[in-house]
Amino acid sequence: MYDFEIIKDPVLPDNPYLPYLSAVEAGVVSPDSLVAQDLREPLGVMLVNGQIPTEQAGLISVGGLIFACDHTSVIDIGKDKIFLGPSSKGDITTKGAIKDSGLLILTRPNGLLRVVGMAVNSNLNPWSHKPSRPFQGLTRNVSINLFGIGSSEYDPVDIDKDGTITAIKRGSVLKLRP
Image (cartoon, rainbow, N blue to C red; front, side):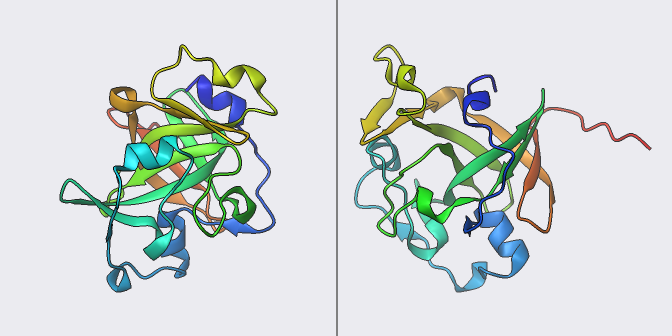
């Protein structure tokens, strides 16, 4: 969670690229009409090379399981909670090249979110491309850090009208105040 602080941006973009769950909730994407794509190269290789699947709303088949792969912004974070928002359409090219900071998320059709990595604009954070960090690539001005076995899972609990997803860390107890 500490690393997410460096890419936190509470301002929603003018030209939003909605994360998969937000796009489904808003009616922009119909899951029944999508066909998961088989990738030509492993997803980890693709991500570390600064590419993200963009066809069919990023719906992919990995090891026989279906996921949606997204680039999201971090609106806010808490101890066991995260607020994921749309990233700008300018953060990803039409061919799937990652151009700016954001979290790399895999979403299962049941809604489970897995934070698998982070893209960091190395022009804004020049220290972000330290070679000591595992599973890391540097493409153009973006450093990609994949979390591997350290990736966290979250359960979405709300999606607001702007497409911001509120999610709690798996195993945490959500405490609501009256």
